[in-house]
Length: 102
Image (cartoon, rainbow, N blue to C red; front, side, top):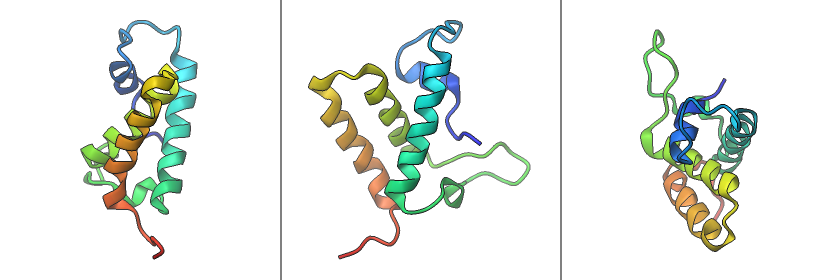
């Protein structure tokens, strides 16, 4: 189950929603970004759901924004900005990390 929609990813990378040329690539990047987030957080994304049982699953906006930034960094592969974007993604996820060693 994805917490980030294809339309949200398209908005993040400035692709018109009706343009489906990059849909498969974007979905792979969404899946990879969500897996990266779970690894970074040391917890499944389901642990952070904020939605009632009857609603579609939702994450806190800053957590979702971090995942979207990861998608953007991997999609654009602009090496001049890659580290800056990934640092911001880490910063947004950091408060949610669990089992952080000292």
